[in-house]
Each structure stands twice: as C-alpha cells, then as structure tokens.
Image 1: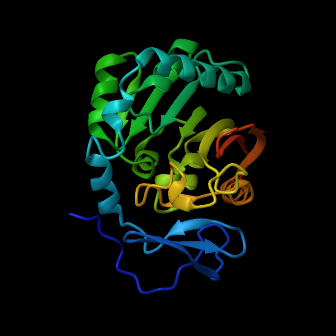
Image 2: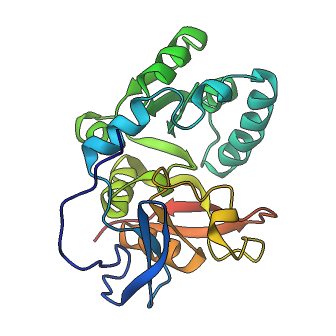
Length: 258
C-alpha cells in the first residue's frame, strides 16, 4: 500500500526561511519536490504525515536495515574514527560525558562511543534495529522511537550528539533541530551529516543520485540553508569537514540561549 501524504491544499512554504516562492523542481513517480527560490532548500510536498513516516521505518527492510547489520568490523572501525573526532571536541574529553547517537540503527556508533569512555545512548524509530543493538551492545542504553518524543521525556543532557544521515528523513526540520538543541548541554557538540544537494559532484539529474529515494528522503539541504536552520535553534556550525561524495559533514556547538 503506498504511503499516505498530508491532506493539505496550502501552497508549499520553505521550512528554513519561510519563503513562499517554491516552484516544483521535479516529479518522480508519485512524488513532487519543490525548491525554495530564496535559500535553495529542496523538499517533498505534500509531505508524508507522521503516521506514514512511522510505518515506512517500521518495515525492517524499507531502507536496507538488515543489510546494514553486516560487516560489523568495518562498521565499528568507521564509527570509532568519527567518535574520536567528536570526543576531541568535547571539553575535558569523553570520560563520563553523555553521548547520544540519533538514528543509531544497529548500535555501532553508540558502542564505539561507550568504548571511548562516554556514557552512551542510542535512539532509532526502528524497533528491530534497537532490539539488535540491545542484544549485541548491552553496555549502552537504547530507546526506540522518534527524537521529538524522546526529547520531551528525557531529563539527561548530552555533551556530544551524533546525527548521521537522519535529517533528510524528517518531515519537520524545525521540530527536529529544536529537539536536538534541547537535549544538548551548553557548549555541547553536534556532529551532523546529510546529503548535500549543492555539492559539485551531485548528479545533475536527481534520479541518478543514489540518495534521491522518494519518499524516504524528504529534505535536501545545502551548506547555507543548513547553517541557517541550525542557527535558528542555537546551534552554530564552526567546522565543515571535506566531503568528496555529495554530503555535508559539520560540527556545530550549542550556544547560550537568550
């Protein structure tokens, strides 16, 4: 059964800048993406509703989750490198500090963070992935569900947050970024990655891009509009890591709130 979209006759508006000049960019199968003329955000419209997104990611094979559990050794090695980078940015080092892996899947990065000395948590909407993580990495804490609900109920604040290839999946970028920010300590560090639609190596034809997978990916950012989104939620990008493939890799710090 095809995923349902929000019944909404309103014209599309950009989630980042609020602009209303958002012409259709591409229609692919049953899905239409618009592009904001002001900031360049590319987004699905009409957007999937929350129930449809939950159903999409409750299917263990919907985004290749089972395949992702293979090659554990290489997954952990890559995770350790990324955690080491993030740990270096945390004031005082990782020992005893709180780490959150948003979109933890099978728990590889969460486990790498625990091994580095963090008190490590992972969260993912895929309950099967969380069950796998709990079984294989019992030294960390794992929660099944969405980030926004987790932020509402969690009283822990995290010194380091890792969020890789998640933002492009969310229906409401502002709610998601607000939840990230609310979970972070003052001066906490975020390592975030997401596809870069403005990258010079992105295929000119969007359907030829391997991450253009409607409707799994709802939002496509470039450097400027990602910076703008995060700044609205007191997160300042202070370093952008080089990416040969069309992706954004940024480090951001939680600023004080007025």
